[in-house]
Length: 214
Ligand SMILES: CCCCC/C=C\C/C=C\C/C=C\C/C=C\CCCC(=O)SCCNC(=O)CCNC(=O)[C@H](O)C(C)(C)COP(=O)(O)OP(=O)(O)OC[C@H]1O[C@@H](n2cnc3c(N)ncnc32)[C@H](O)[C@@H]1OP(=O)(O)O
Image 1 (tube, rainbow, N blue to C red):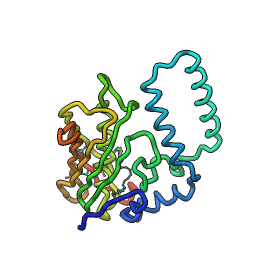
Image 2: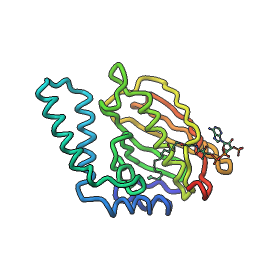
Image 3: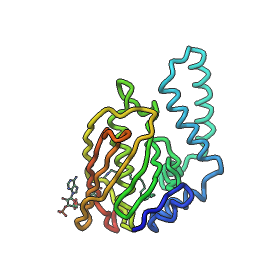
């Protein structure tokens, strides 16, 4: 398959019918400022994680955050109706749980992207938390598993090897390949690198869902 450059506007075109309608239903519900709001929450998480504010600032920030929570609460919906995480057209998917995945190019069985972890995803020693790295790999391998018009799949196992420390606040390279296809079983391999130095690699087994599991 020809390599193409993928930007936020044309990512929807590559989605299989299930993922396309899942994403489009969320996009239809979305108020225009949604992406700005979640980006603001993402920066808030990073800023809060890295700040040591005095008591009056803690109090005022708590009031403001509680005000935002109370403002949103009346609009709670069921999980099947939520927008958070469903904007497949966006590198962040309109969520702040896992780090963004800026897709540079993809093929049916391969993905090349970049990502970046902020202070919110820090573990000890000022580097990225291992669980956040596993989270990023689950997303990146999961997306690649369902490329090429393949049916939906689910993570059955994910093994991560941490090769070297992963720095915060740097644009890092993500490469994923589908290495083995055996009926419903898909094995994928991914690497996370910082300018050529491998920080972590992962192997995941994804199982194609049967119709009754959809
Ligand atoms: C370029 C732009 C891209 C744009 C986007 C593109 C696409 C969009 C796609 C997605 C975007 C959306 C979200 C982001 C992506 C990913 C999110 C992360 C996904 C997850 O985070 S998802 C949650 C965590 N996940 C679970 O919550 C799973 C719980 N679990 C189960 O739901 C079942 O367990 C299931 C269904 C997995 C299997 O169950 P089952 O009954 O269907 O199958 P069964 O057990 O029969 O296994 C069949 C064969 O797999 C072997 N097998 C099974 N498990 C194995 C294991 N662990 N190790 C080794 N082998 C294993 C068996 O041994 C057998 O092998 P054999 O056939 O050879 O005997």
